[in-house]
Length: 577
Ligand SMILES: *[C@@H]1O[C@H](CO)[C@@H](O)[C@H](O)[C@H]1NC(C)=O
Image (cartoon, rainbow, N blue to C red; front, side):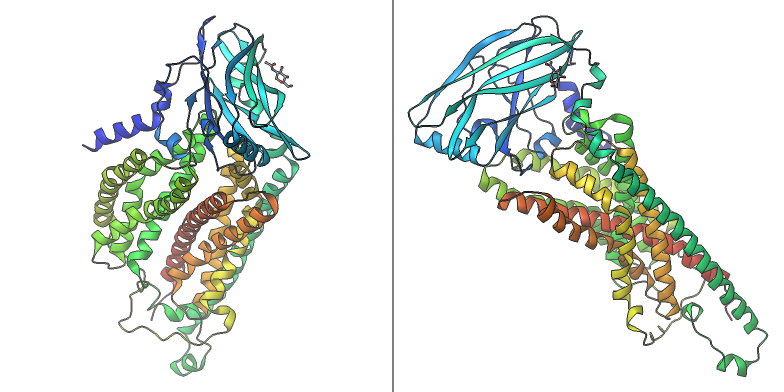
């Protein structure tokens, strides 16, 4: 049954490959111009269907066999046939497509669009084309009425398209506007495989700053790893020396001696953290998200995913569903080791933590999108599809993972026994309080990624196509190493202050990176973009919160894993009397 569901899922997600043409054309064959969306230039996500503006459709009819894939529906792709008659390698002289008679209402709609720098997007053979709706010159608004397509072909492939918009007409009520177009075909030396290269921006993404920041973070890693190992080696050796000397001391000396530090809490250090259910759900989710990020980055490196509409999102959804057992396994086994009893509730929390937050945010933004009639409004069928994926794919796979995890890896095997009575936590200096450690923990990890964040944000919120996934992979690895180092140091300080609540502290001190990322997104919004309007603002801050949250869960989990290894190591080596 699972198998069938997965096949349906794959078909749903990869429909685009089966449905789109094979990109091969014969002379004179019909070439379809799809109208996609129109919207303000500065608000990339605020898009509307092209024909929501009173443009007119050409005479040619009857092609609409296109059907959307899931990820396209989620991304607000809304292709409609333009009615333009374009044939492969057949030039078209300037031709009238249709006429619009402007009344007050239409003038108002077009004026609003021109005033707000609306531009539209179209597709030919999967290649995006952009054009401006109109132009404003000292309070006069005019609209472009002529579209010239220069299409470059190479053999049987379309490899290059330039759109030129010409012939401004003033927007005045009563005017009759003729929309015209022409098509010129030219041979082009561009290879089919390279046809997306002109949309990439190497000057931006391979800028010196980018290289420099990677180099910088790399130096930080070397420095941190060196520092951590040096401090820990020294301190641990001293501690071991002191503790082993203990055995030779008599009782009197031992009582008066400076017995303090992490060894004191050996009877509590493996005590289960509070809210074990929520904690293991977070850690399980963190394992899953980390594998999703790694898998998607690697797919993106191998597969040039930016050349297919929506394929990155499809891959992410597919990988997320497929990695659900990871979530169940690690969350479930951790919960069992922590002595949790209500494992079904834990599994549900694990399985639905991310879907609930993502769908909740999307639902909220959907309300605004529907109010705006934006093309981002998610259709009902798509919502049903997503719910089905959650219930019929993610949930059962998580269940399988949980059962396997509880049985294979559910027995606690701590190096120290846990005392029956918890030890009181002594007073300590203010900067040793978990809250302060947590806040400071995120600074260095954030420092190692914030330049990369700039590039990622710019590719999502502005019109750059992110393609340097190798950089991303490198930065991700650097982030993981920095996070682990910083978390270990934080935990060491905490344990030395005889505070044994290290599980949550290690998780949160790594996860606090996301606070800084979210704060940075505010800076980015106000100083690097010109977004405006309720819809775009809600969209920005909603999805940025999700992004930061997911990053926090990933960092928290990685920090916690690293610290667990560290804590087991130091406590398995102490001799306990
Ligand atoms: C499109 O424009 C670019 C840059 O102006 C030019 O190099 C290219 O030849 C044009 N392509 C076609 C098909 O006209």
